Length: 411
Image (tube, rainbow, N blue to C red):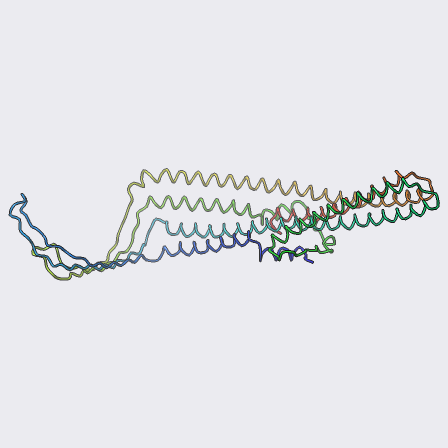
């Protein structure tokens, strides 16, 4: 027996979909670390050994050539370091963009978690509904068998016809068929729940019988709207998309600015081949300084990218407004349906009360030969339909409540 909160806990632990988004969240965490590492200096080292052949020397008109002996062993070692001190805001924008990407992956995980929870809520309530239908059908089947037994007893007394018994036995078979179909549907729904939760094959989930006793908070529409504004993940993602596009625009503008860095180097080369005859020595030198780099092509290339980035900001702002409208409409529509589910429940409760009264009166009238068998069958069918409709109405109230929580992303 599992309650709906226990279902949610198992989904958080076992759902493959939630696990996938959680891995994406971890990847975004590493992307942020990588972006922050751009603040660290760049350090490179190289070491090489080579074999040098002899040289040949000519005059400018390629006459009077002569061989120039060369040391045949060459070596080169270089150590260079560079620390960016100004990049036009590119590094800071890259880090801010990675932080926003981290938040977006967190929201993706939360959104998927809400979707999985709502999916499981649907499965769980359908399973609950089917189990209740089985109980209602079994109860009506027992009632039908009791009527048949009574009819057989009356037939021995000569006050009932065999045809009456046959018609009720036909109804009994119809109820058995309905019961078998509902039981099969119950098996299918149970399998979907077990698969989604990654429970052992053959596990049978029994919904908590106290579910219908759960308090349903009938908040005012404005309260639900406020909850959606605060908690709806789609709205948060749309708002985050605006900030991400703003950072991308800053990143494009940084290309229009120069890059300044501190540089340092250490070199050890040999032999010294710029002299003739060649000097068979190692030559060591080092340097420190400031390097400035400016990409002139950005003046006629990046201005178009900057305009594109501004349009993307405008687009994301419009999408945020659209998302607000869609969430507001969704909350309003489902709130109306939520209230309707209460009306439906009250109606079905009254219908069951009337159907029970009608069945009791018709049954007594039939026993006293004051009603026809068709009246008895109609009363029985009416009672069955009312009982099933009441079960569905109770479940629909719970479902509508959880759907309101899903739309506001407070599941």
